Length: 577
Image (cartoon, rainbow, N blue to C red; front, side, top):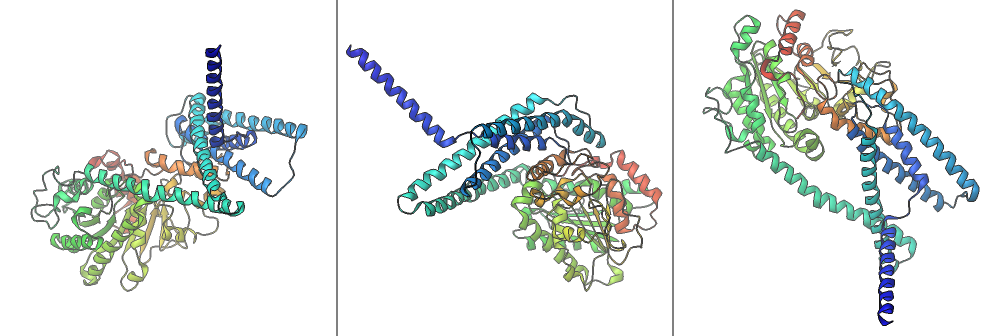
């Protein structure tokens, strides 16, 4: 009898412990809301509509789960505000009837959009020359979406539990209303400092160190160039090993005089390429001064054309851009660049923005400052150029006040990222009725736009003293992402769709923003000529417009495009790095 009683007590104690654990989990995670889930499913349905870049099942599942969680959270906020304002609430049969009607309507919309999603995505794939998907892979999408939603939901409830825990401590020393406000502030501050000053800093430091090591900066560098005229050679002012892999590739690749002469049919020069790695100088100014000294050593200011270029985040220089312009100027050209980061462009855009702007500004300031001291009839024509993050930093560095007394000859910027202040200013000057993705600016004598369907040659007026060309693909979300799409449609969504854009764009607040954010991640692996994958054929005509090669004809452009299409220097089809 005693053993039975002891066993019962043990069983009862175990049950009580289980109930306590269940209550603790329930307190942490909270109650599940069906109305909030319906809002989340509407967000999921909206995420199945097309955006700028086609999505596969894994990406769609991640997007769907994320926006479902955001929709659920939005419903909770609305409910909280409704209750806080003491608004009327339905109960009983009326509440149940409304829930069933809302559930039916939501599921109907969800099923209809599911049935159309594959057709929409394949239509976009076809426009970009991609292989069509044979199935939607619904179960894969739903499995991934449920996993993402569960993770986001749990994380959100844990944050809410943290708030309740902190608020309970404040209840002991202050009134409830004050405890609520201070508790909320405390949670936000805690999360901010933990992510920003803890995890965030370590991630940035680790990424930069890993990329520096991966570039084989010092011990693993290949032998330097044997030609004493080249950057990094025994006669150079720049240490070859410290240049880094992207710079070394830029210096040693590209066409030489023999290749250019064979294509052009007349004697040519070896193009000059100067590159300063981040490890070659302690400061942006020091690297810029070193670049200028190397330009002087190699006789760059005796060439016909000088290009001051800004690389992408890793320091990469796109051969699809630089090789063609060296051909069209018969090698009588010099190009200079300075590295500012080791990170991939998307990371550098977020984490090292100021570094890129400072380096580009220092290089332009130093080179232009020396260039304008030379006689106007005995110096090269000066141009600035950048791709992607390099375009942003190059635009920032192109200070019009510094150029007013002696302006450069032109600028060519490809794939300008959406935060670029100068690009945004120019975009807003477009002529009424011209499309946002390919605007018309005035009479075209100062600024023109090019894309995979336009070469910037057709305008009302001829070129003026300075020539500026933007190359941007209509499907490039790095260019056309809009932070304000959180609550309003981007300008380009209000225009008729371009050739490689979907006719089924649907603006949905919040969801569109996340679609475009995910598009940016996908845009780097798009087919050449779409997304953020810029390639040589589309660089050629803009370079012709900007630099006006002597004696160049439309037939020469076609020949060079065909030559590039055959893959000269294996650099004609590129992904941004």
